[in-house]
Image 1 (cartoon, rainbow, N blue to C red):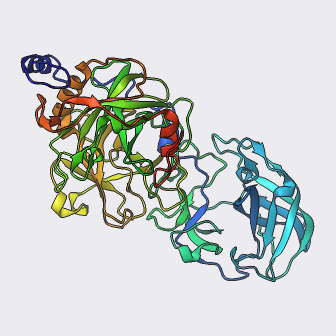
Image 2: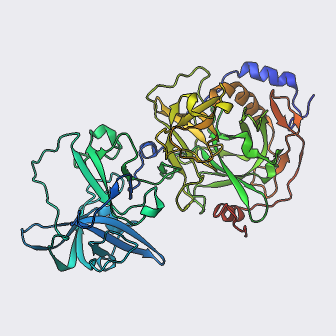
Image 3: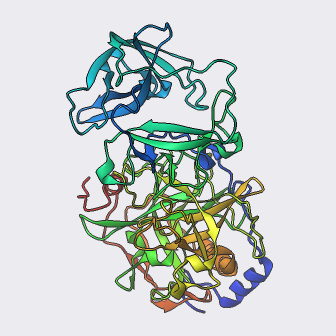
Length: 539
């Protein structure tokens, strides 16, 4: 008999492995109730990437809208002067309906400030003219479908036309725009170049077929435009790159928190997995390096897991905060990054709901379609101010050539966007690379590492190839599932296992239990997650 969490004979484990030799995916796995919103984000874009600085007067119809949202912060949009009566002046501005909404409420007209002939937001110009809005009218805008995203503002005063202030022409009802026609977009949105912040910029765009725009949101009354090669576009938030996920759209995603002391903690991602087909699970798949600190394994009792969490800086109503009972890791090599895989057992099982579900595990010989949509997700580092939202980025499978050659192996997958600007980054480790196959999401990779500069072109991130570890995942997962849980309530203190001796699961590490001295309540966990870089943890 060998000690492994609880005493279980090796012969029993062998019999169990022979009887249950194949993972049974839960019927709940890989199904998101917000599947369309996961794969095609509805985030309203607010940025120009690529393009060039607009020359003063080259866009005489362009106006800048500012909406004070709260103290020290304001939102902004663009708009254009239009004229409907053929006169030499106007008081009308055409813009998007979502710009005049804040949450579910429309903004007060008097709170909207319009700047005309304002080429640079950070430099006051004598020529700039500022107006308040007297009134506005919007169409029946639908936030979910983004349909009818149009509004007209009436300025408090009329604007006389000059060579620097002119309206934009409106098309006729039957005007045809051929696919591939060159058009332009303009705006003051953020760019990748800090010194260009605040400049009015222009980008050339081509009209595209509707199939190149987000399928759930493209309507007959919308145009699809952009540059399919990337690099020049109206852009959105990122992981690095990517967008904020929709709440509940990645129900298998969990957030791992590792307090180091009272002022600093580390974080990783992970996924709920199920190997028995039941409607609950206590297993989390993550990267082994997430469990190590200075070449030593962390105490499981000091690992906290947030399940059903969307924004890690606030408490979500569906979220559960659980301790880790024990875990098992593969023989991870921190120099070659081989075997960067581990399974955690939570302090109590979680029952599946619309917002909490496992991801599907692939078959050993599963072939990934060449056109499969694959994604990575995480709460890791971005180029922008971190608001704590779970982000998702589309990740294409790449040839191993684009990953660091010294770390290439058959147990790893290279994935990313070779154009640069879209990738996993620090803090995304342990999270999934998951692909849509037959209307379900399968996890094919575990985020292991990337280049120090996360968004370099012609480089890809490295993920653990899940299907090469399926036998190990099955054996380790079943062994963990068999260990009894003494208390079904959420524990203030957790039993922990330090991985120092070999277990009865092949290629695994574990050790005996003892009590963790570090108390973690949900309020302390939220405080920690609210500023997981150098933030004081208080109750």
